[in-house]
Picture 1: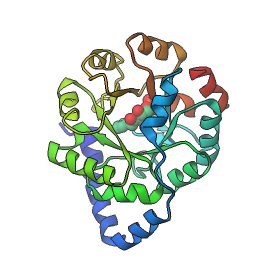
Picture 2: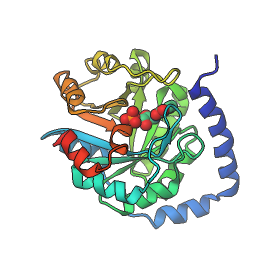
Picture 3: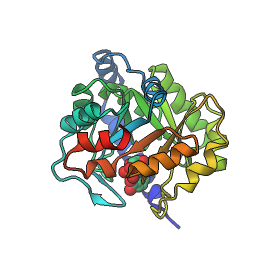
Picture 4: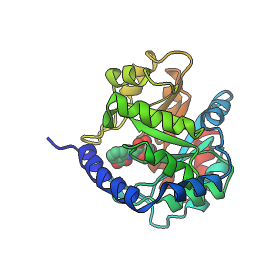
Length: 261
Ligand SMILES: O=C(O)c1ccccc1NCC(=O)[C@H](O)[C@H](O)COP(=O)(O)O
């Protein structure tokens, strides 16, 4: 059966191949040289989690599971609201076809605040890490379900060469074991099944006990209220990636503060 992840990855291969044809490495290098140094993504998350909750607040216009989430989409305004509300980091969707995201949204969000920013996209090629840094990203995502071990290691090495952090996303015990063969100790558990979009917090509860103590452990997807976070904290999880629930709020700053304050 072809899953949504399969469909996304298939289109991503064509899309990345096309950009590789049209954007020269010299152009990317010039844009990287013009960027400010990466802001420490994991360090910012750890710092906030040390005295409360570490929130990666996501700027997300639409998704395959929910369609359009926010009509009055304004990345710089959302970035400022998340920062004022106490978020540790931002995540910005840059995938255009499935999430209506954009590299321009990431650049605009980063310029509007001083938080480190994750490029939220489907990384299939080390070239995308240079592209991520050229747009200003401080961290990239590796989805273990999307890659073989060799590709993961190459993409991680390319990101680390650019001094970016790497969030490694897993769904089950096998994927966690593969993630732990990498160097990054920033591990996310996606509670959303990327095949049928169901959300199950049990995934996080089951995996957190298997992560070594030197990991920063992040629960992702489907979290919407303070009691969700407090329940996670009872299992030892203090870092969260949250998009839709915050993006649907009229007052994003107040909602962010209420959630983690
Ligand atoms: O959000 C989706 O529908 C989706 C579908 C297929 C692949 C990935 C998907 N989401 C990416 C994410 O990881 C979430 O945007 C992120 O964890 C935040 O989730 P939420 O708080 O539920 O918006």
